[in-house]
Image 1 (cartoon, rainbow, N blue to C red):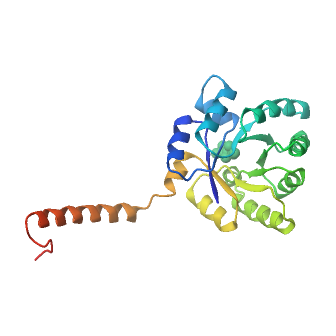
Image 2 (image 1 turned 60 degrees about the horizontal axis):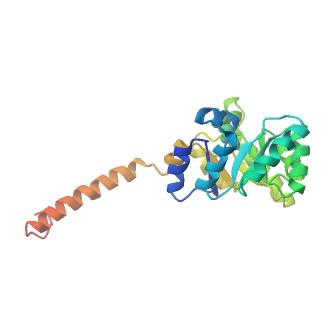
Image 3 (image 1 turned 45 degrees about the vertical axis):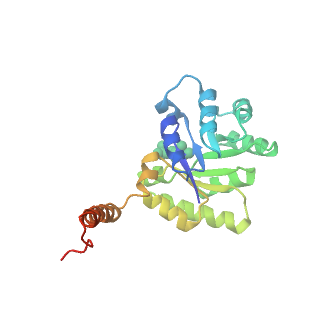
Amino acid sequence: MKFFIDTADLNEIREANEMGVLDGVTTNPSLMRKAGGSDFYEHIKKICEIVEGPVSAEVISTDYDGIMDEALPLAELHDNVVVKVPLILDGIKAIRSLSSQGIKTNCTLCFSPTQALVAAKAGATFISPFVGRLDDISTPGMELIEQIVLMYDNYGFETEVLVASIRHPMHVVEAAMMGADVATMPFGVIKQLIKHPLTDVGLEKFISDWKAYRAATEAGSNGIDA
Ligand code: E4P
């Protein structure tokens, strides 16, 4: 399973990348707004220089021509740029064209299995179902992942299932159990993946026992309590 970070914050991206387990980055206009900066294209280029893997950069047009006009310069920025296109009628048309030109796409704002099916038929490289936003409206987001993974497997679609809008580690566990290809997560969730209180307690005990052992051996005893 691939891990992407869902942020445009360069410091977070650098820090997550240093862990050595990062496979890519997803951004969106809201994340760009949060990260700040003056030039969108330069910002995306900087991300591509930090992480070796797909970097999703989103268009904001909603008509075919506008989407294509935005997509082409984005795709030219760097080999790893994936053009993020909304799951609307003109978005699907654009994904079809971009895919025919060998340009990678991430079809975003997916909330239903039929949307995912159409995106795969159009040749999207990634489909991004938003699980957290479905949970927010009392609809089980992970059920959508289960449906999409099954449908894509049934027909051998190559579109990768990129689980988006992840809010907590259990989304990641379920996504992995369902065989989703990618989980894109805020940095906070990536860090939560490795946290366990028993690890912390166990490590503290190992360190204090080691100190006691060293003190005892340095004092000439064998380190075993009498
Ligand atoms: C996906 O690519 C989106 O950027 C993101 O996962 C949306 O998450 P949110 O629902 O937390 O905004």
